[in-house]
Image (cartoon, rainbow, N blue to C red; front, side, top):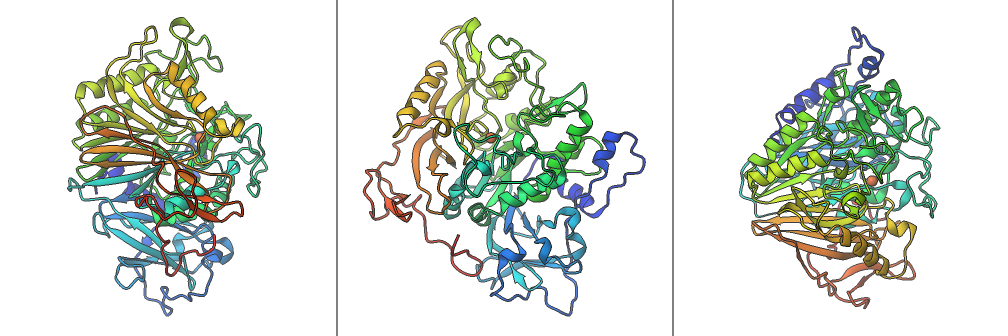
Amino acid sequence: MTERNSAAQHAATSNRRGFLERVATAGIASGIAAVLGERSVAQRVTAKPATDRDPFEFDPENDPDETFPQSIASGGPTSNGVILWTRIDPAAYEPSEPLAFEIATDEAFENVVSDGIVGAESISPEHDYTVNLDLDGELESNGRYHYRFVYDGVASRTGRCRTLPATGADLDSLSLAVLTCQDYQNGYYGAYAHLAESDVDFLVHMGDFIYESADGQYTSPTADVYDGREIELPSGSPLAETLDDFRHLYTVYRADPLLQRGLEQHTLIAGWDDHEIGNNWWWDDEQDAPRLPEKDRGDDPEFTIDVAANGIQAWIEYMPCRVEYDPDATELHEQLQLWRSIEFGDLATLVRTDERLYRDGPPCGEQRITCDNEDAPNRTMLGDEQREWFLETVTTDDARWTVWANEVLTTPITAGKGYWQTEFIHDSWDGFQAERETLMTTIADADVRNFVTLSGDLHCSIAGYQRTTYNEWWWVDSDPVGVELMTPSITSVNAADVVDFPGDVDDDAVAGLVRSSNPHMEFVNWHKHGYAVVEFTRDDCTYTVYEVDKTVDSEAAAKRQIAAYRIPDGKIDLEELDVRADANYIDVDSEGKAVTVNGTGETGVEATNESETAPDPPTGEGWRDDP
Ligand SMILES: [Fe+2]
């Protein structure tokens, strides 16, 4: 197992305890504690039982969607396993029916390397029929596998998963698709269909996998909820509050066929950001409870703890994720520990932080222009314990690339200088400047070989330099510490959703405006949706941004490369690479058909871009032919 966070190391044990035990509520004194104590999360594989009927037997004619409407997924990789995920449709649920699983090295399942049964007692309405099956210890390191579930004679679609390399193993390359911000009501998931065809090693999600909204609250003021994207929460509330609300959101998002394709074909390393609970939420130390600024009772601790615990439980149920979760705990901070590190052999270490559960509130409340509290020395986003762990992990890491999976923009985004300088986003690290400086100074002093930060949340793509200080009074910055690479939103609202002129004119105008006041940024694009691929080798790191048209609910949504940068090993330097204008991409013609296009707009050309030209889709049982 290569997760170094000691807490994460016993995550499986902790989870297992939670899975198997009903939480005792007796003896919990306060109402707030009782809110947490009434929960239970359970799923666990048991030994294969003797049974009259072979639980692995299925009729290939049976439709997997009717039994597995959220399909399957894998996540939480270790060097010897993954977590496999599925959910049984309530209409197909039989209380005495076990769930069989198989993992094989081949798609035909002729070489099965692990199989077993999830006991019927571990599948129940109590956990919304979800199953998180932890196979840590069952698989080979750096392995690629095919897997499926069988329930009551119906096979799921076949997925692919992969494990991490062994600890310290030589690894020549690693490619991570970096994803964030996928408001279901604000677009379609063509990006996931393209990812399904991509040969990236893992999906790294930076958070906002769901939005807690059902009323289009976070869509563009100039646009409606996209067709077919209406949501009605069980509580009737516009924003999720109850456990059923959050579960409903996950069932809706995870029922999307394009999203399913991406998750079926890759192993997910999941994080979260604010919308898994509520927009811009933070932790109020005085009330010892979350604050939910968008909700009517967002300052009522009993309500906010309940909402946050509901969001956390649904997230745990629906996201295959290796985190420490202890539903027995009577404090939210004790229930969930999301921060952890993941080693990819000797090549890279991914250090994930939680930037919501411990963060202070906005530095000046709603006020921005004259706020002067954003650099107060005691303000924290990480909290003391997480910050210590983070700095210890980063400064002692000996991988070639030390990669911070960070939720919100670390570098400043300001206008003006001196007294008139205005930070636009206090929810990002601009609202926590003293702690940012502590992090950057400590990392700079430790002389980390290559420090790369992956960020999400802001719905734009940015490549920039991190520094210990960003001089507020002069156009002089300190030496760079690392680079920050932000991935665009898959669907969530950006500048183009509000105002979008033809071509890239307005893209360039906004980028120019932002960069003129923020010279640490080399590249900014606030108009394109899609994702980024960050690839690490012994020689360099490359950051490639892909635009995918979110307005088309199709696997053939247009995709094109919009930026690429290279960071050489041992240098903090963003070298701009040619956007592959000569490379082919998939577009949609006037009749809605997918066509191959080259950079000059010529259609019907032969594919030339091998690494990013979609290969033939996998064939065989379980592959969806018609999205
Ligand atoms: Fe977002």
